[in-house]
Length: 298
Length: 298
Image 1 (cartoon, each protein chain N blue to C red):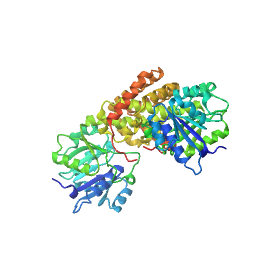
Image 2: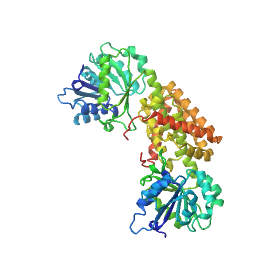
Image 3: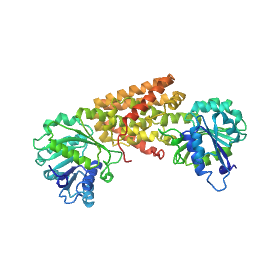
Image 4: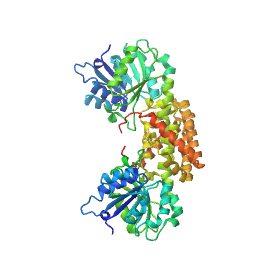
């Protein structure tokens, strides 16, 4: 079995996610004694490349036109780009991956990959579809950090063609990087659940901010409004892509949610306090039963 | 002018709010050297009364049937009951307040008081309508603490009959207890804004939990769902009362919010990425402009 501390890691896209992968790998894997592993990074803009090299995070940096060189040397490639850019990348560089490499992504929608798998696959390269469930309103390499993934969830959409050895290696790797709860599912189930826990929540937070009539509203806040709208400080191009790529599932969740809103509205307008009390008690029970999602660093 | 450290404070209702007022007054006001002030507490159930006395928070505790005795001795009375219970209390004990006393409430809806003012007022007692904007999913005296109010907002619905001296005294008092942003407004504006920042947020959080099909959803969480549903661990009887007491304003906010949800839904289904991107950019700008509500202890 491959030894994580001796592998060469290629990070494509050095934003908050790619940067955090590089930093966590450096700190948790390559700091082990006798490590022969390396971190190679590439990115469209070059400022973060020099930063990563100067900070001792990356061993070597590649400008976008030298991407193939990075790929030829990398045992495990993290493609940390937006969803459609990831898809294009996998198609365009299909023939440049090192034979035997593991390639993985971080995209928040998975259906687009499943549909294109025949075009993406190479028999000697293992594409392991993954989703590290960490994020926030911060962006860019400067906001990345080695502890970013601690106590977060990781989802793998394991495919029948994935080798068991590679899949287990990836599970070990992400565990070493701090992820604590690893879930294996299909692309379809992933998109359905993420459409609910992540995308629907972002639509709600955005609609709530949009419906505020008064920017001075925060003088009247006790914490609820801030809780519900932290995620409204949103990366517009990324979330536009995520919402539209998963539109059928997301809109079905929007519809269920709005139906529940209407039920509450009706009970309130009709002053049906018995019904409302039951609904709220049920809500509390249901939420408590769900338990904690993860420890989110704020 | 009255000296805060020498006054007798009466706390009616010793839950998380009443308990936190008692503890913060003890720690921030009555610990000053030479203080002659006292804290008197009363509550329907008696377990918390002995706790407050044993902990040295209360000087004297009164069972519910001795409420009048507490009121006859108190210079400032905090009525920390549910909204309608507060209204009933003010009516029932109108003749028991000490002459010259300040009486204040903590209710999350204010319209119900404004309507009943003629029945509540006594020329020699000053009723100052207030709303400490602190809360959470915890309940009861055991969850109260002296730092509960630090960095929170306080809203006063100042009335023309309030004496300037008393009003200023209350502002000084709540500032000493840790509140940092004090807003003066009308009962009508209060109910409209709180209907948005607080009640609408609680309806949304509850509808979101209700629309979850799967209690195992938290394996797919990255923080958003947890952020949006923390407040769904709700005190059902209290919030039923708050929602229904403010139903016209709350439902108007629900309608505006639902309309915005529909706008997002339409843009997503029509794959109108230009529109969606603009909406999300506007959202981010608007949210950033609103700034921080307060520092919420979690």
